[in-house]
Every structure is written in structure tokens, then in C-alpha cells.
Image (cartoon, rainbow, N blue to C red):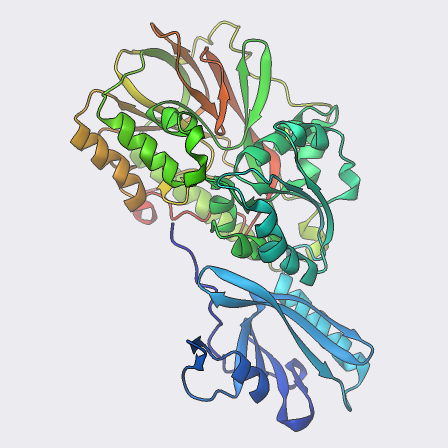
Length: 516
């Protein structure tokens, strides 16, 4: 996945007197456009890039800090303190600090300047978020504890976030924690893990008697420490922990669709995907290779792609948008509306923007989860659903987010809050060469337009295996019984933190030119 570089912004050019603080020895700090320009030769020398300990480039006299990287500022005992995220590479930022004695500057002037800085640095994002942090030490290849202590915690502390940290000890523990959580004590729940812990957090909130209130009030954010890290890829635009931490600090509350999955007599919530076929096998069938990280999916793919295994089934769907051209037009409308809403939010006070980010009736505060509009897997299939039998299914994949892993943008037309699920179907009896081309096209962004791929927008579906007793069904990467299941979407039921109120994926190729 393409990631924005955390490099320092270039110096801007225009400022007003009220935006500038002047300190002794020719030091000044100015708010210019979207950057904080610090004219300080000492700091500039410290920020010069080095190779083998040798400073590169000419002697600079100033540094430029993007306002997005500003974590906090305050006046304390006559000292101006500015904490910010300093990029040490394209993949990592670390907490850094500037301190200056006021000298002859009036404290009232500096306090006013600090408030302007924080307003511009945070925009509509909430400051000093109160976070319940859940760390899974065994996620993916391991190392979540080290990632938290070294890459994430210093940034959260520099942003003056309130942190309540728990390390999970067994699978399912986060469900119990979130079911019993005091939702008024926190603004956000932050799993440090793969995608399994976000799944548990959402289902824990969904088990509460006040599930709709809890899912609306508590945002979910994600520090990537696992194999896939799809939630972070889509919402933070990165699978790098420190960059994800910065995105969470500056993240805005965003309503997100959730999906109810019924199987047997059970009901669970899904935020990411459901899969049957080669993708499910590459995920669940490689659990023993977790030490490989994301590479285990590629290993599983190579092991299975030449077998031409098929998965006989019956699929019934409530289809809303069946054609790819119409899906691109729908995506264009959703993006346009989201961009317009983002511009409006920048013009309203931060407190007002926190009050009503969701207009969906399914997210309205109420008792428990919303009722199922289409019943459960045990009920009769509605008459207006389309039903088809597949004898040679190779892959069934339903997604609510675009990226399923850093290099796997399967659902390019996915939107956070459009009340629709994206379904991909392809046959399993195509040649190995075509299968390889099909799956490698996911990384290049050509998957959506492949003729072997059926791509639809649906509101509900039922999947029924046929002539097969054993196999893999994956719900958000979790293994469930190989039995019929039914899924329907709830528009805006959940809440997450995102960078811009939308997914960070680029969208299907050519969506900008789609006719609406």
C-alpha cells in the first residue's frame, strides 16, 4: 500500500505578526499555512539528516514541522513547550520536544498563540483522548509489547492522552473487557494487535444491553501489531505502528457500517470481511506460520493455487448495485459527499463536530443491537433475493473495508458508511496462470476490472456449502464452523477514528470519470 511520507514540510511563505513569537538570540516560531516554522540554528543542526554519523546538506537555520505532527503545546513555569512527532525515516516517527524561555514575551500573548496552534493542529479532532488500550502480546509474529513501549506510548503521552492499559492473556478476553467497560470513562478503545482484537472489542460492545449506545459513543482505533492489520491500513493509511499512533492522535470520529453474521443460533458482528474458498484457506490454514507475519498469506496462496480446488455452494443475495460501472458511479457520489462534509466540518467548532457524525437510524441510541431486517440463517430466504448455485466456486469474499492487508486492496469500491457490502466471486477452475494474474492484480489495483471477477454491492446474503463437510469459513480472520451463515449490514452502527472520515484506499480505477 502507498503510504504518505512523514518527511518535514517545506517552508511556507506568508505569515502575520500575530502568528509569530520572537525569542532572544534571533529565535522565532511562526505559524505559516499548515506548518510551524522554527528559526533556530541549534535545532536546525540537530535535525539535519546524517549518514554514518556525518551531517548531510548545507547548514540550515530553520526547521519546518507540519501542524499534523504537532502533538501538544503549553506554557509551564515560564517555559513554552511544544511536543511533536519527528520523522526519523519514511516508516517511523518519534516524540520530540522544543522548549523556550519566554524572556520578555507576555504570558497572555503566548497562551493565546498556543491555543491558536492547537486549534489549527487538531482541527475537528478531539484533543487529549481518553483511551482504553488493549495489548495482545502474541499478535502476529509477536512483539506488541515492545511496539507499544517504544513506538506508540511516547507519542500518546506527548499528546497528553489519558491511558488505561491492559495486556490480554487469552483469546476472547477483550470481548469480556468491552462488555463490562464504563463507556463514559473513555473516548476510544485502542487494540494493539492484528485484526482479531478489534473484532473482539466490537463484539464485546455488541453484547451489552446498551450496545447501540456503546458502539456509537466509543470509537475503535487500531495500532498494527499483527499479520494483516487491515483496520489500520484503511483508517490510518499505514501498517507502521508509530505512523498509526499519530493518525489516531489526530483521528476524527467516523461512523462505520457493521455486519451481523448469524450461524446456527449465534449472532456476531463483523467489521472487516467474510470469506470462503482460497482466501479463507490462505488465512486460517496458515495459522501455524504466524511467525512469518504477512508473508504467511503468500505461502498459503502458493501452496493452494495449483490444486484448482473448488467449493460447491449456494449463494442468495439482496443485490443493490450489480454492475461495475454503476458501482464506480456510486463510489464517486460517496467520495464527493464525504469530501463536502469534511470541508463543512473544518468550519464548525470542534465540540459541535463531535455531537452528530452519524445520520443513520441504525446508530441511534437504543437497547441492544438493531433488529435483523432479513431474519437469521434459520429463516426462509426472502422472495426478492437472487439465488444461484455454484459448482466450481474458487473464492467468495465479502468486505466492508478496502485493504485486507497492506498489499491486498480487494474491495477498492468499499465505503465506510454507505450501508452496502462489497461481494467478490470468482471461479476456481481457471488455469493457475490466470489465477496468479488475478490475485497479483490485487496489489496493482487492477483486480476490480478483471473479467473473471464478479463484483457487487449487496445489503444481505446467505452462503450455504454443498457436497462438502469440511472447510474454512473466515469472519474477520476468525475461524467459524463450516456451516451455512447469513449476513446483513447495519449502516453507521459502529464508530472508528480515521484520518479524513473515509478509507485511505484510492478507489477503483477510473472512478473519477464515472458518469453519475
